[in-house]
Image 1 (tube, rainbow, N blue to C red):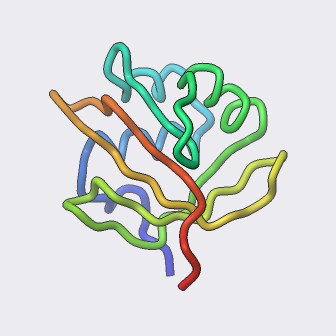
Image 2 (cartoon, rainbow, N blue to C red; image 1 turned 135 degrees about the vertical axis):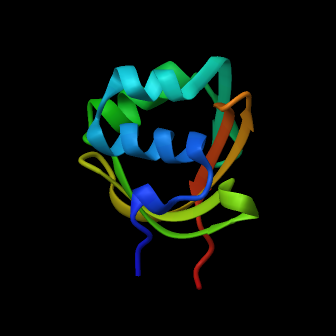
Image 3 (cartoon, one colour; image 1 turned 180 degrees about the vertical axis):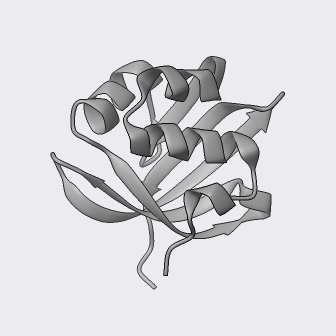
Length: 110
């Protein structure tokens, strides 16, 4: 079962996922606060380099399975043309209506 993106609880996370799935760089960057940070599987990454490689140039998209922590924690199937599909965890920090940090990595098996 997936959660439609327009039903995600946290507006900043909803904007982030909507822009990611639309492959819309401008809307994606608008969802992030200036100086936003991120990590992938526990390693700090440059958000611009990471999103270009893992999202925009590889047609990244996510189907949200579940949300917790008032919409700041998601489990999603993440798919891109480089790696295929994998079950991923996403955690967000939101301040002032913008994502200031996001962390992603492979989700534990059910």
